Image 1 (cartoon, rainbow, N blue to C red):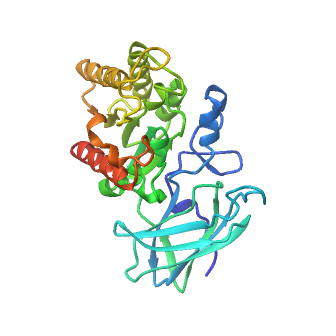
Image 2 (cartoon, rainbow, N blue to C red):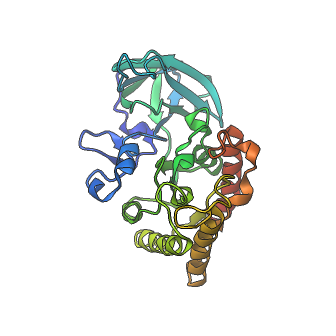
Length: 327
């Protein structure tokens, strides 16, 4: 079979850089963003292939990736591709790290639709796809869901990319998830709000705030105004799009511990929720608030901060229930 251009099959793409690679921040507007966001945005978190197969027994994926240097600890980590269908993982294949290679995944009967989650580290770029013994066709487009947050949104400590809460909730809601989670960042950067306002979106979710306690400390008053400003700028591009604000999740160490400005995470959470609710009172009837504190218990955290798979599942369930009536 002839190799096919992967573009019609790719989902979860927000922007592309000058070389055509999927990136997660506007490549023409990086100067206004902190360096950590610019670095995390290079990783194609959440980008995947979605397709149907007519008579094909397998799919071949031609890709290129960065390869760690011989002295790097990640050198031996395989490139793992996971095939999903009907909401479950049906096959995985691991490819020895190489700058350019082909991954082959066997397809179950039925024709799909199928989703392939490629490895997210080492910035893999899909070059071409083709079916073995049959034809591939792009899966139908679904409503686009932009999800902005920090490392938890990016999927840290989930055991697979498909287990991160935005991926789980996206499957449950029938949405095309576009993951704009930036590990270590997402502190209410207003340039991010303006960039999101330019992207097509049928649903929006904001899940930042935890790094406003530690990374760049904020006060409740400052975070209240930052949240209001972020929402105002985002609404300039999406005035009536369903928008869910998920306030910071449980972080036991930070709940009652003052940061450098004397603010606890509990106080910062209350400020974010108040900012969103005040905007609803001002007339934004398409904005909804999901308090993050009750969603998780300490046993749902892998390291005291990031959820394990069970924690990601709980977040996804709560987000699904909160958004479903408004989609």
